[in-house]
Length: 106
Image 1 (spheres, rainbow, N blue to C red):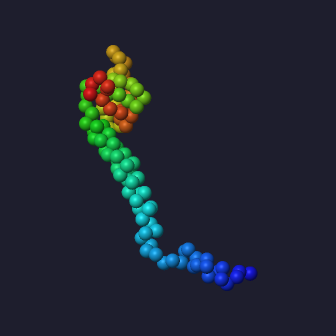
Image 2 (cartoon, rainbow, N blue to C red):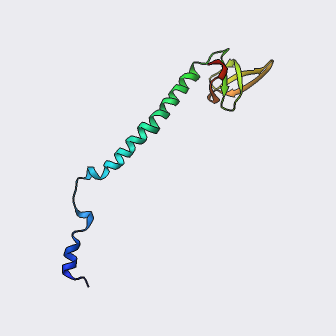
Image 3 (cartoon, rainbow, N blue to C red):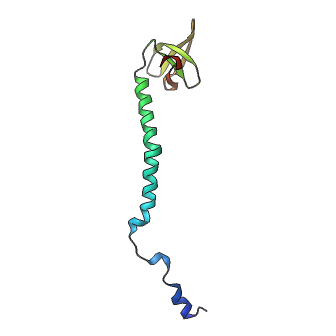
């Protein structure tokens, strides 16, 4: 049994205050904006730059793969790059696995 004076002192339940609903979502909106500008947007920019780099590959370019192979491009198709890693040693790799220009050739 609750004593009436104690029940009045407790006040209304916290969920029934009826404040602005936007204020309840404001922290979530701020967190999403921070994630967008610090994580999502830079990652999209890097992906776009990598796509542009892959589109600009030409025969004779020296590149490095994500696995660490460095070689000169001797053949290109839509999906495959043929690299010459040593004299008369050619390796075919997926075009998406080319990570950038070779370190000595920037």
